[in-house]
Image (cartoon, rainbow, N blue to C red; front, side, top):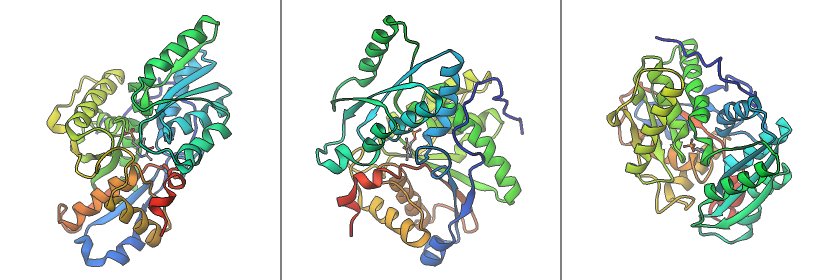
Length: 340
Ligand SMILES: *Cc1c(COP(=O)(O)O)cnc(C)c1O
């Protein structure tokens, strides 16, 4: 197995690595035979680091590392009103001593105060970000770029992060996570059949794919459940971002469409809209493990994994690793759906 060498990419430490891998013993006790002999483990990217944690911190370590290396004084990014990426960018910028501006779109059809003012949106203000809200169909990245141009004209040094922080530089965080997982799997004596994650802006899955492929391993072992784009589009995004990340790492390897394992069937009727499977998954994890999935991403992905395990997709004895990607503040924005 080839080693990954990412040391030449500047990195600003924002979380304590490695994050723990834990078996879901409480869930296994509760579900018993329904698990068909499959052992589910979780990687706790939801609890480590600043700002209530989450998968965006791994990307932000490299994004802010690059921004700082280039002398940036301001970062600008985009997302939905309840964006975890926006909240963690605000937290990380505060930590790094940079000014942060957020362009947030009302892309989820909700106007109630839980959604518009609680959860992540409350934290954006608390972390000192300047927030601009835009209509759901607005081109927020164009607005962010226009603002960056305005600030640059005033002499500021501005770095713009794309949606979810999923540029090739951001994806390095999950290429690094793939190497971290392999080292932990070896120490645990576990051979994970799959590493499973939610997929929004595709960077988490793409980074895992790039990391596995660059190490000479099978990238099909990283699997995502799409919660934002529909399946075909999500697959194309993972492919494009994985190959751009491989190029950035200096690898000659490129992945093909049939090397991307992705399922779009648990997204429901749209991004940020609850599904019955998500509600079951969030409650089950809370009540058997005392751990928190989120209503927008990891809840839908874990619903997909539970479905597949119950349906017998994995052989008895297989171990599967689910990435707990965070999003905890989203729970407070979905009070009405989750209450009861
Ligand atoms: C952003 C996010 C994801 C998805 O990650 P992408 O890299 O955007 O695909 C999963 N879970 C949570 C909680 C997130 O905030």
